[in-house]
Length: 244
Image (tube, rainbow, N blue to C red; front, top):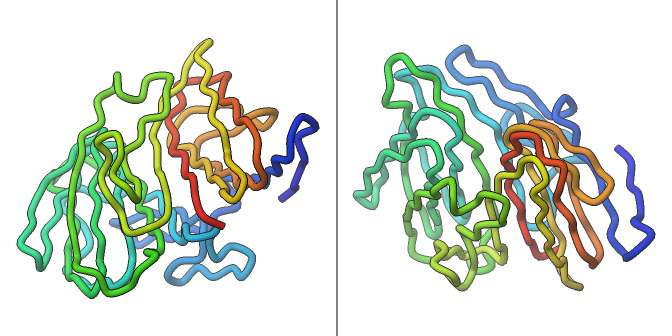
């Protein structure tokens, strides 16, 4: 991994290549871990600020994660293919299809299960965990469907601490956006002093300032300045604005 400074501002970039991620293969589940998770442990990759898990999960038809507990974690699933079925101890049940996001604030404690409801179609999603600012709050659950137009050539906010612009509200000090980028589309975003950012490419390829990213790549960004997203090739990505 290399860190490079942009000459026009104070931004510093660290690329997390897709092929350097931890891997897990349980037959029914194939997963790539951007940060240490489960049996994959790397002290150099324990998280980035309050972002502690990004798993790129591919689940066989009819398979999934049985009921298990969580506490004091802000967890969302960004569905990229197929559908994700959720049930929890709060009484919630839902099926979120590709383009949708499922969010759960575990707070003081919750038990949930996640399954692929299709018997034949694979399901792919990004599983993301953030740390809450306050522990042992009341558990919460929410979903949102993001239309293609919502994120076409622009950053669509879907999770934030203050719930602004119709986003789901989280206990984490974070703002999370989704975007797609193609052709001559360009997105400009300010990274403010006292914040840091992470870009996770779900599909396709794009450039962030002078850094080319492909499917599965992550990019840690520190400092302050203007971020330019361009040269998209069927790109879909998440952008995290985080507390250091």
